[in-house]
Length: 428
Image (cartoon, rainbow, N blue to C red; front, top):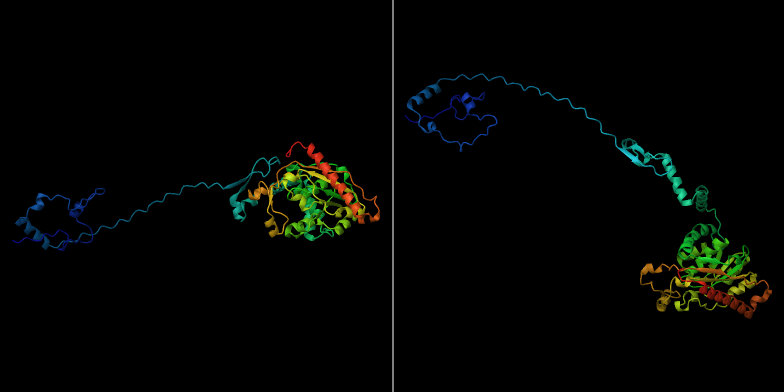
């Protein structure tokens, strides 16, 4: 008998196919238990029974069994999966509302505890966290800042400042025929120059009583310092000690500069000419003049405190015509702020300036070399030289003008020597 094909029971004569309902008990027995890894067929060892050939009786029994129809077993009803019970959600505690702590803006104003503002509330309103700061804190901060800026009397000071701004915006202020703006000069120019005069140069002023409290007068001073800083320091010193504005006479180079010229006009300066000088003196102004000009501020350090020529005596003619007193002023300390050790004349002619200074620090240190040295300054106003005792035509007498000019120059020079003898050190 030929080898019969072995067909598994319950497959309806089709190898490899089941009934499609439920696997037989034999098939279920062959399935791996749950949790047990299934070994691959290649690794399973072959048993002895599988290796032996089937006997003839077994083959005949299998053929008869295959011919009998097998009734299909009813498929068991599929068990519906029991509904999974959902655990009730645990109650979650609400997250604490973020709080922005705004400490008191000012210490010592009666608000020790910081004020807190919920951030969520400010976000709901569409505001920034700073919008939640109480109005009282803003007012307290404003008062503290005003007190620091204007002092204990901050309220009237602030009121005056706001009034100043209103006048500037509305154009309700006065400027004289020379361009002098007294309000801007007091509030800005003097305020900026005062710390330099008091803290940096430590200016000591003598003979303030020789400056008349009212009426016209002519202040004549020596000139030095490479840069005309001495004129600015003289202006702030007279303003603070005598309570008057000094109206300086400047060279035409000052007014040709784009920014410096307009600032000089607002500060009270005007062109150094006899016509303007005489008009201001007749108007009762205190006029300042530096007869040495660029020869004084541009002289080398080796010739310090040696007065140069006083020009043609035009300032004396103006004083004689108006009959105002001449007040000599001697300034010690300005020669040392920029020690002039050299000059570049070719570059100066190219730029149209009197000189290009070379100091121990400029141009070697660049812009840092423009910082003046903190020398100690002494300003002494001499006794007035009266001019009202001369005749009306005295200003037309060249010899008289020369004599008065020489008298003023010698007075300043002798006072400089005296102050240098009294000075202990350049920086003390």
